[in-house]
Length: 144
Image (cartoon, rainbow, N blue to C red):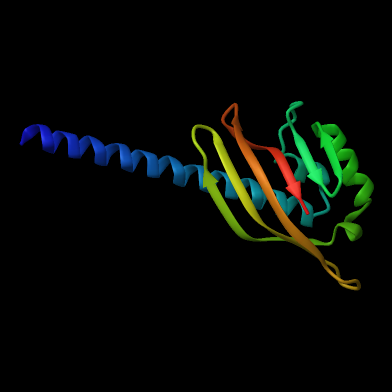
């Protein structure tokens, strides 16, 4: 009976620890997305890009184009959105965050850019986050 009780206790402990780690992952990834949204809405593309990995592993896929690396991704954003007015107001919605093992998370959701005088733009995205030196960073972004 003691073995069964010990086994159940250990199983419960691991279950609680796993759930706690998943909650922590979700909160930290949500914090990155919130920081990105705030930076974007201030017209701060560099601040928005702080959510991305600066390493060579970064991939950004949109339409028929695949971009590799942080600097090229930043340059593409600056070309597409040359100023605060062009950036509009960003809102993320329908977020689903899945903690996918040690230091990994997958996020899917919707994005919307609203403008005062022109129609809004929007679409869907899938992100892969990786924990790099204790910070959660986007290493893969597929946006449509």
